Length: 81
Image (cartoon, rainbow, N blue to C red; front, top):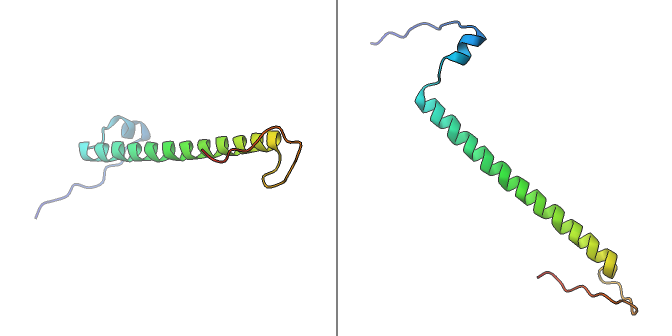
């Protein structure tokens, strides 16, 4: 059997100075990368949704509500291309 050293009490300053083991550091870096990708994907999705809603609102301003007939209309809705 191997012996395990007891817990060591350190101050917060000492804890910041001691480096993490390489395996833990790699795992944390991987976690940060995944979080960044997730946040980036979320941000892009939200941004595209906002732009889509703004464009739909602008089309409604120019053309009028979708499905409502207006014989004097000068602009047309061309669908989603």
